[in-house]
Image (cartoon, rainbow, N blue to C red):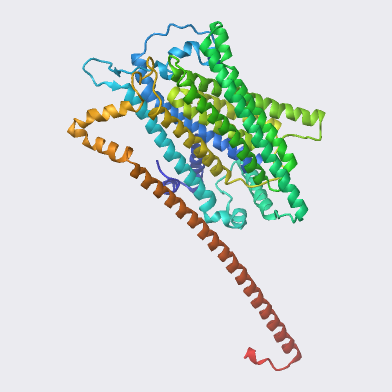
Length: 588
């Protein structure tokens, strides 16, 4: 595919008139923009609500693309081969499985326990397909790709929003040079004008912001309020985690007893995800009430503090659930504990999706009705960026954990993200107003990707590593049945390759890179060094921009002085000419 510059050059070389070339170029530009997912919708949202709200929808589309890739990888290398070796499903479908993930789905490719541990051969004497190696290598390579993709996305966003010198430049370039003269459609022109107007308002709001001069007493009061808010939020998080822990243990005991009917047992499994989703839905609303007491001067600080509190809440609950799965469920003696964990993750994802829809209804629609009909002092609500973004990161964390226990979970997440985008877009347009304090959020996307990388992705890697290296797989289900650990499948494969001289390079990579502590130490040092260099580049460019600004100011003062001196000389000269006096010596 050609770059934009190459396409323009190709169009210029065509034997066409300028008008025809302009029409071709505009048509190609609209075509390439239409290929990008929801490009027009994102422009409308950015023009009306600003970059802060737009950053949420950009992040949502990025996650949707990420899950599409996850689904294609797992479906191609794990699920399709399993279809060849799959037997018939004797369980009946009741419809409740869509919520619980149990019953009929238990005997499908949705869960780990259904996959075979044997090599798959479609035709006798043909090439075999080792499901054990395919399962572990597909998931392992996928997480490696995710790691580099997240690092690349962070570096790219970091460079565009922090390293780029244009970030520290003034607004003259944006005001004078940003208009795209290729736009000829009236609707597109109005949309572009609205976008530029919002961007300039955001830039000016930051330029006009000033620090408040508070007295010592007022500062002490502010610090006391912030400290009390943090104590309350951390205490609320601790109470939520305690409730989740004891509820999960009781839920497992009820499942192990199995006293009720099959329908009652399936319905009982919904208690834990409903309570977890309720806590994740209602607690952020409580945290948002703290903002009314803290009264942040800058909207950015308010968003960052709220995001931090929500991160602590959601990651703490996720950590408690992971401890429950890896230390209690894995040692509970169930027939297939991996499938049980996969069902828990399925229920958490589905119920969280339903509560996300309910949150849009009650948190935005009902809130607008109350603010416009009953309590008019409340007014129309604003879009809660922190709560919605942390909801996406939380559910993506569950999806990453569930890839090992439920390989098709990204497909479910892909459908839910697709629906959430349209629900949130409609709710935003109908129920929300633009932020009262306009502010520029160009660096928010970098923060979102960083939070997705740490603690979300790094925590997922820890959970998957413990599952593969430390836990014993079930004896009667899954591709790793009968092994003392999941990684023994790779060790056994390497032992076979050792006897084959042609595979010596694979054995060397395994022993000298994968098993080597020194390799990962050197890799960590390289990453830290690159990060430090990037930081120094940022600081250097900030200093350079500041010095250039000072130089521009000095030059402008010098020109002002010279202009004043020239004007004074000209006035003296005209005065001498009128009076007929002798000219001063410096005119000779």
